[in-house]
Image (cartoon, rainbow, N blue to C red; front, side):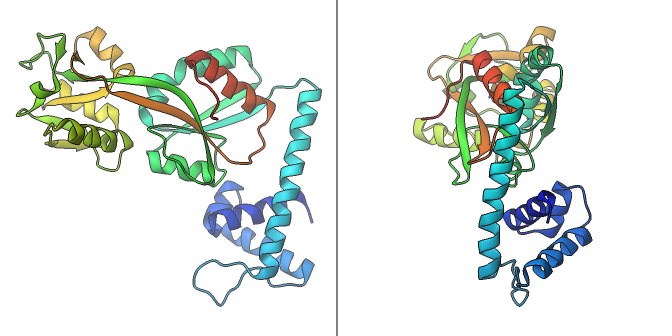
Length: 299
């Protein structure tokens, strides 16, 4: 019985999926099944109840899962401690992030981190917000980066920073000559929003209800880049994080309009799975990111 067998088994149970466990460990689904049968033969017990349609562990399987988690946790702790003792900061930091953070907030911090720690590789994947949480919970990544973080039982949330939302319009739009506007100025015109399942959209809908502002999007998009392109061709006005439109404002393809009557902040946060052992590289990256953004650890 090798440590790899226990990790594959843990990933299988955590995800309740042979395909996901296979992907996480870069093996085939057949290999995951073979590993499971090998463990059942080794301990001479049935681990997974195959009479059930849904994935379900037997009593023996549950006991083995808890033991596997303890063993893997201690193994990972020892590995981290050995690196700390050798003062080694190397390896890979794998991040899952929403597009707006990954393209606009994260790059300068990744660049400065890799300059300070050249032996660490940082991998970044762009995902929808709900999939970032899935990646963190399934141990597919080390960290997640999201806006408007939602409390989840298996996820640790570390506040990072706040970004202000501003209105944007095309230089051709009737509001383009203003530097500040009231939210009421947007009523009656075409408004472009994010898809309804995007956290920023949910937060804005709630804000509009509280302010008794009626803004029903005429167009909806699932990412900031496509939304900006629609605004550039004068399809409507949108509310977006200020940090995502600096380049377009400098180039003159978008006009930024600050909100005079209400400030709308978008909180950003780091996510990692509760109980996960952080390697020296992961600890340094999180500290670097928080120091650069003024973030602070959660209570």
